[in-house]
Amino acid sequence: MSHESSLAGPGSGSVAGPGSPSGQPPEVESGIHPTSDGREGAAYAVIVSAMCALLLVSNVAAVKLVGIGPLTFDGGALTFPLTYVIGDVLAEVWGFRGARRAIVLGFVLSGMACGIWAAVGAAPPADGWDGQAAYVATVGFVPRIVIASLCGYLVGQLTNSWVLVRVKAAMAGRALVLRLVVSSLVGEAADTVVFCAVAFLGVLVGPQFIVYTVTGYVYKCAVELLLLPATYGAIHLARRYA
Image (cartoon, rainbow, N blue to C red; front, side, top):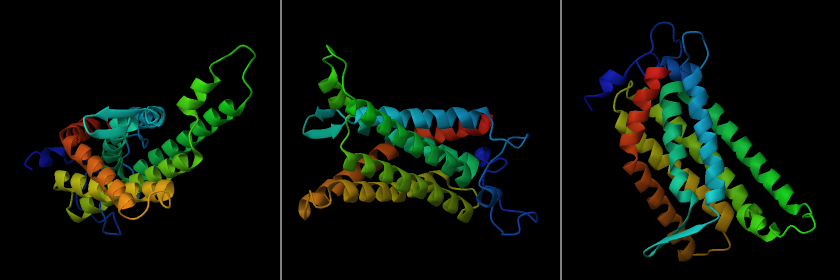
């Protein structure tokens, strides 16, 4: 698109010069788009915080099943795709290493939160407190689903970021929309396959498992495509303050 030339800046995917012995663009080799003082800066911290917050919110929202017409999905499906938008921003502006750092941090925090919620739920309730059932129903996750969700998130996000950065290098920083679409399609495929395999393989069998997996993948990709304008704008804004 014609706008993309205006998005190119330091670390935005220009061809590496003599100082890049590997021949890769700077952000592919170093993995980080640093600020002038060598640190990621406040914008990076804010974006990573938003990503971690969305992950924690999605874990709780996923407890509720939402029904709209013939469709039934968990509440986390409304918020979780936003983490991929943030993942795209991190990979595009700060490179794979910057995105990986945020993704791993989100993974660790989500795992800690689930562990804490489970431990509190297992602790004996105080005499006279009648909220145990409600608490367990809200944050008492099924271990297999938690593990599947965390594994799917980690593999999907890392794949999404890696593909985006590699396509960016191959295209010399051009075709932002193309790399956003390609990385989303590949990343969501990895996320969906890992989650469904860990969570439901053996529970859902044959065509039922395939339909569930394909439906989840199509939904996630559709949401990502609908959010493309927001992703494009967020990247432009992040570059301004990075």
